[in-house]
Length: 332
Image (tube, rainbow, N blue to C red):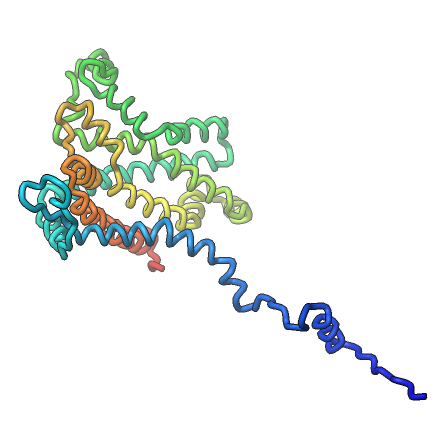
């Protein structure tokens, strides 16, 4: 009698053999490669970024190179069609003096808004982070609350306060000091009027960003400074401010971007100022007028691309200026 003997396998080879016998056909199953795993995790973010940013940006750039060609009287089907315009829309934007005047007005508005808003936000954050301050929770809520009000609603409220016939500001100044009414929609004072709304609504948000950065700092540095005899003002200026430099730079960049994007505040002022604020007072108001009022979506697309480029250049310039001039560092 012949006895059949079988060898028993042990170790990894046995595991692979059992795994193959357990699958139909004994084929090798798919397992994710360690090199592919990171790409699988970031793929949804890449797809989302492309869908909400790259695709709309590409479509806007495409529209900026198009124009409407009218045949005959422009009536009937096929009388109007979209054709390529090359860089004609960009040429029109760069030759449009009204557009560049709106850019200059936005920059002047930003020169008023950003230093005042970030200065107040920094002061409030340092005060609330001080060691002996009462009613910190109430202070945070009170300063942050205007940011929770929609900008259009806040602009309408301030606009009503600016109206000469209803302004409590003018009434108070006249009753206390005998000052005549202030024209809040004058050619120069309107910058202060619009910037005041931005300061009122944006200080609370920037204060919370800086206050959060202050609360994350190590307390050991403060204790060491107090042991060396430093007071609260010296700690704030020499320790806290340098350590929250990244947060200050971030708020400065965001505020710079918001400067060229300002729309709600001057648009609300335009509705109630009776001509004190024009329809092209800011770049976005110019885009809105050309796109929806003049019905020239192609010119509006070109203006949008130019504004985006200006925002990028201005943000980089603010980043470098903030690092080198204010903090003495190098831009990274």
